[in-house]
Image (cartoon, rainbow, N blue to C red; front, side, top):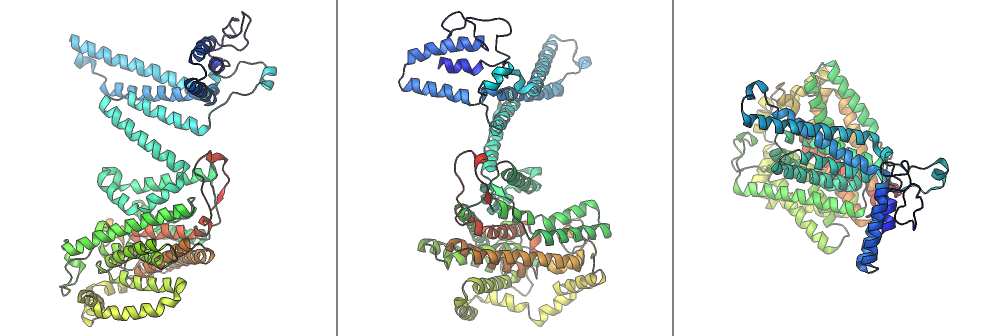
Length: 627
């Protein structure tokens, strides 16, 4: 052990004594010179040797020698510790300097008392300490490993074995920890504890997601509940937390692609229609001279959910991670459907405008944490059809029964939203799902649909039938949905190329920026009116390519579970596409996020089958995993 400790510092220019004379250091056996020796290391080696002789070769000695060897191999001789210590000193000095400037007294106001003089002296001492720490830290960060590199001649450098050095990632982690401790050292005890604990949690989560970015799949699958909690607990940060999540996710994905090389970026056919849609949307904003704030918000509402597609598609995953993602998403959907059913049973309050005055049988419409029944209905559609697909698949019986239970609860949740658009979307999505995966069940489903007309509660039938009644149509043509559709269509025909300006009529952006209080209640018509028919065509092209990719994944996948997932996601895809005919539910963030995220996951299923992500080891040395 003494030899290990001696070698730990023997090559240090800072600690080595070979430039000031030769020492008969311990361990040489005589007073001979020791080239490259270090007085401190030699003394430590002598003490370590004595401790090793006292401990002996038992278990304690074995672990002591193993610890010394690990210390030697940890990279401390490579100079990385200098930057770590420098980081701590610089951050601590910076924090104390800020604190010094904050409490710096006014000499004219504070002069004349002994207590004030003592306080001023203490404050100025803090300032001096801050300057010293900051200067020392900057010096160590700038000098780095040059303070500790080996003092060898040219011949020795060629033949000597290089000192072990820690990986860059280890230095980054240690530097982050040093920065956390530096911040804590400049704060008061109560605040220091909270800040340190919070930053350590952030560090642990960041490290996990950087080296296991597939963990982000679970966060994205639970996005609605995370969004709900964040917006109510993070104060001013709650409104931008989703951007922070997406930015962090993209950084973790970039790390996996560029640094640890766990992902090989594939060709993405979706990029071409997306690029066309983006160019046309920007053209609409420029031609119609939409103000900057409105333009940014409109682009964000329209295109931000597509980031979830790229994350769902490109994040590394194997069958286990797909299964975990599906479970989390179904649990998220199940809880929201259950919450909606609870609202319906307990008669939760709702705005009167959500139902017609003649629909007295409807006590309330479920809206859960989405706070909009159409949005809730659209969000539940993919979960309902995904659970139904798993219930009809060839997975273990217990899992199928559990999926059937989830499907029934979520179907009921869709029903109590009383969203006619969601109901029509569910019918279309179920039909698409059956055509793709279970054609033999189509006659049975048609028979069940006819029977359900006889057993459904009258409130549900009246809600659907009322939409086709002459009374409703006349009212809608006068000042309702059909009237707004007529206005929107006329505007679209008048401005076919770039519309009236994206975000300036009939949607969330127009409502927030007070362009219009009207809601078009049709995403496609709204897009044509605001951005022009070219933007609508590009978006429809985007949807076609996305749906085609989901079908291709289903056809290429042989694993029963993954095949069922692809089929269920396709059914939900069609359902949400149809639901947007009568409501702009893609502008509800949780709906757009879930839709595009699941689409991206479905695209990656053929590659997830049979891929086993490593659980331990240096990720930098792992082979690339094609996605």
